[in-house]
Amino acid sequence: MNNNLTHLNDQGDVRMVDVGDRPPTRREAHAIGSIRMDASTFELIRHGQSPKGDLLAAARIAAIQAAKHTWELIPLCHPLPLSGVDVSIESDASLPGLTLACRCRTTGQTGVEMEAMTAVSVGLLTLYDMLKAVDPAMTIEAVQLQHKEGGRNGVWKR
Image (cartoon, rainbow, N blue to C red):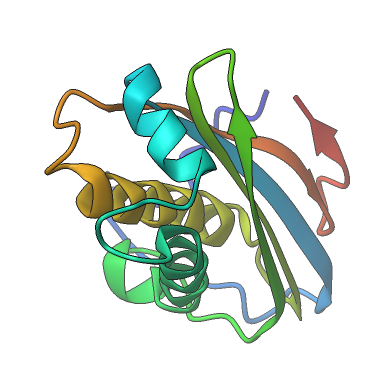
């Protein structure tokens, strides 16, 4: 594990990392998370009876928008030209709840891990927002990076 804190200068002050000398490479990151809910809420979703309409479409759009705006939300992130953002939402009766996954891609000088994790977080928050009137006790869980590739550190898998 790399313990260098690249967002600090020699005096310990916060800085944005200069990636200007790095060659652009293809970058990809996959993140995942879940929202756990009451079984009755899960059944509403399975039967398409959400009181606020197509919550899965809303969560997908929110996740994509979040990936595109990560640099505005996370203070030291660079703006990235994303070449692709894929979002999937799967039912998981074992939770019960939903699992949201996101894959982000770019060709650039820095990675897209934060974009993928921000997308998952905001997608899950959107699901919570659209269902909170029915089930305020829902929990968002295990938002995590699953895989990344590209750049000088190559491939990393959980």
